[in-house]
Image (cartoon, helix red, strand yellow):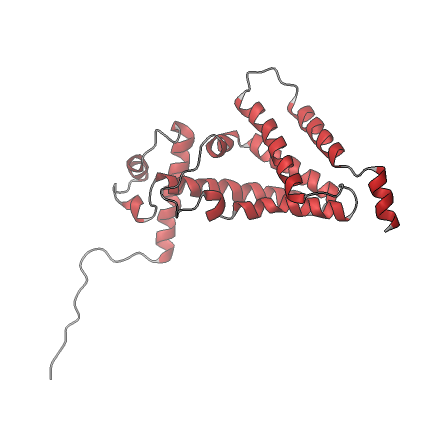
Length: 223
């Protein structure tokens, strides 16, 4: 009878999924700390590997390059951001109030994590080829921001926001608030008014412009 011997594998045994995820998470956390401390340009895959105690080649088994790691760092920030925003509106009734509370939570998150803001919004995302996706596409960020459009649409339905293009309204809200954030976070040497006062006034001006006119309200009531 012919006996077939099982060929022994050479090298280290492959890691299970849990072990791989731990290594992947460690790489992300080490990169996050190095990016915050030294800036993205000063950090290399080699430095990340050395800080983590890995071989120089190992990070490439999990991430294509430094930009790929940076995107997962961004993802951590955005998950935390939208968790805060959604938690803030959980028990709020009324679309207009929900929208305002959501936007305040959005602004407060970035003010409370200014190092994260700078890592996200002062760095330009890059793609290696036309077939690659940007971070906002790959990780579904546009879909998360769609919550603002949905809240605007709900406000229109309850006649607390004037009828119009909800996508446009949502983008106006974001660009307005990011102007505020950018000035206060990156130009902090300017003698700005107190943060809370600027937030309140900005939102007051925005919502005043979105308020239905008396003519629109009358027309809606007559329908």
